[in-house]
Image 1 (cartoon, rainbow, N blue to C red):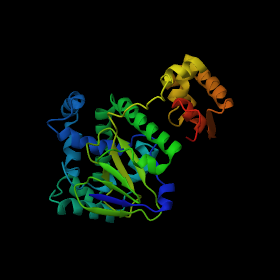
Image 2 (cartoon, rainbow, N blue to C red):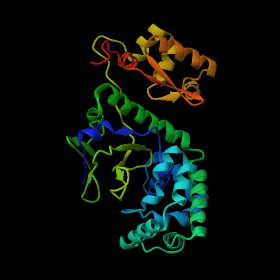
Image 3 (cartoon, rainbow, N blue to C red):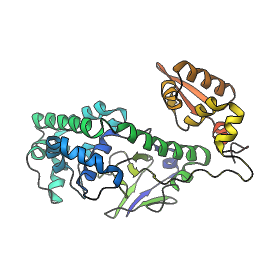
Image 4 (cartoon, rainbow, N blue to C red):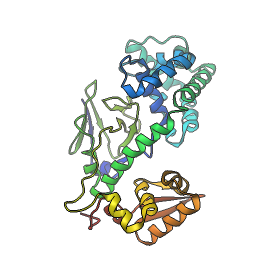
Length: 329
């Protein structure tokens, strides 16, 4: 069992990542490639990867055993800023860390050979080969599937973010089901080894993952930023409507009109104007106009970040989506 010990400061610093992490998805999908009885929706994907990614798989699979430990340098925190940022961080891993982590891989029974051994020695050509293998694997495995991964994880992330916004972090930590349990001040998770992690005021980053299987995954090194990767919910129940009310979509459409209601519903998570237009199926100018109207009504807040504007729901907007009259109920 994994136990993550929280303080009051950790509660305040706990958040759900903005979306899927390309390196965590790559590593965890390598586990799914090995599964002969993968879930039905992954059967076609697995076959395509096995046919077309033989070379990158031959280099990457020895670094990611079917069970147990895999090196933390394969999932750098910088990947939150995108694949290339994560790759730069991986290539900049100090030689001592490479040696230590590959050594631990060997100690767990996966004797390093070929590329893994050379990476552990910090050889620049080996690191470049690893980078190329990751690029090729990402292109083959996710080129046609990444939008599906993003859509599934965004739905899960937005739901948990709404719970956190409306009811607080502790309520959000109770949404993960039987495999992850909040027993204040400890978050317990089913895990292959017995382990305690004291957050010590650093907070926790929760990363939704399409390819994570039934159990969550944490970084092996407790000195790194506390991270828990969890499987996205595939059977999340829809919010129940209050007695005597219509479903959210119906009352929103009557109040706002179908298009503006759709815009509001797609804002169940932070997004840019361009993303809002894509989700709602409207033009960029139309998305901007609808966001302005919703902002004037107090349902949406907008902030400018450099050359983009990001929109998110206010508590009143969240309450309207849930069919409640009191934003704080």
